[in-house]
Image (cartoon, rainbow, N blue to C red; front, side, top):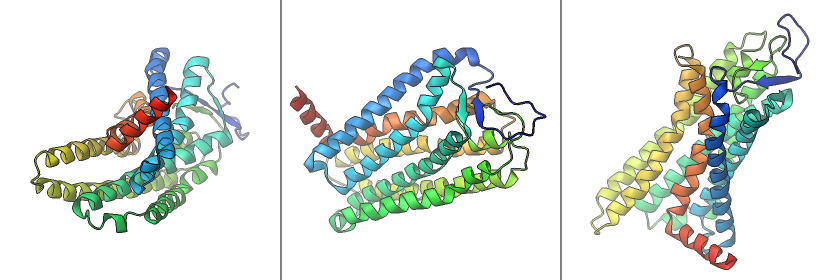
Length: 314
């Protein structure tokens, strides 16, 4: 479909995604590392989910939370990356109006869901290390169910207005989205209406949801660090610091989405658009690839479960 004429008043039925408008010659080279990261993310998360499902010893609250994180990672990657690779490989740039806003909803709701899951997992580790005697009575299967409902409901309800507001705008002119994904502001800028409220709502919602989660995570790990430093058993403190440190670094990397939100809203003209697009794409790939490795494979019980499954296959 050819781009709509700027003077046209007919409503649009689809958009065209233009990845990296300033560096389109790089797309074929970029597709290789993206493909490898995508396969790694899908394979690692599938392995983790299958292991937790089949190993009875892993049917515990902590591993159920890991399963939820893996499911969110899989959905986010499948929502974004196959379309990006289709653009790179086959030049399939068109995306329907409904598919675009569905992708926008999933991205805007599942990212804070993942952030909220990190927060619940940080609380799980806080209880396990700081209050080990009370852990079995606090972190139960019922707690995981309630936490999962809270994670889904809070973020779906508070982020749903973003794609709804964007879809209700009047798109009467240009239909070329200068992005690999249907990001809210990239789409809204094509409308003939004022989208200031839409932009402000996304900015406030992003900082409120992701920012509050990050603060609670930081508080949890502060208490964990204090408790770990008091451990006098030889090697125990170093082991706990190694595990929690890798978790916290991964969470900090995930929180770079806040930086993307700030740059997109405040400093868009000062930062090359291609950099923001690349950050958006990588944010749907690198955490899903690293999460099951840092949270899963480094856990002794999960490592044993994977080894048992591999022996059964052999």
